[in-house]
Length: 171
Image 1 (cartoon, rainbow, N blue to C red):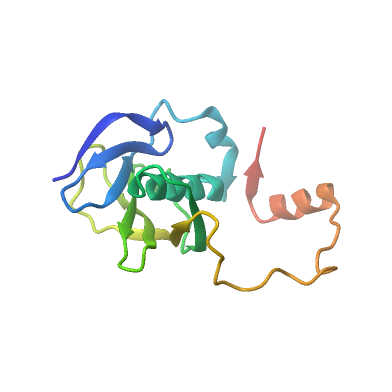
Image 2: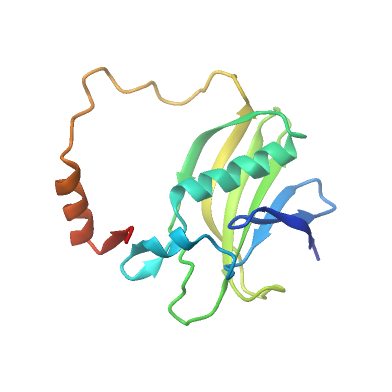
């Protein structure tokens, strides 16, 4: 079994795992040390991991797998929300991985499963995925939006709409 070692890389994102396969990995569980602002990220009454934290977790794993070299994230997909307060009241464990490909890219994944610190027999569920490429490599994804495609939004109206679907951000 993999073993967590050292201090947390970032308190919310967990500790680096010592694994034999050459996979860079971070492993974490919700803890009393979690940032206070996390409680402010509620949707439908559940505390969810913010997408920015998911991206940061993928970036840190990619950087660790590339020996500290700068890495850009491309083709990131959030497949499902990461509920940090499961309905059964139990804990959730999450893990971020970076696996080197033969083409020089990194296959990145954020996974979760029910269970307390120390592991669980439950299967891992993919939460987010993406690709890490050397910083500065041109992206192969879709082109930027056409100029004029953006539109101004009234922030108060936007947050009222968000609150109307059960999201709560901030105090």
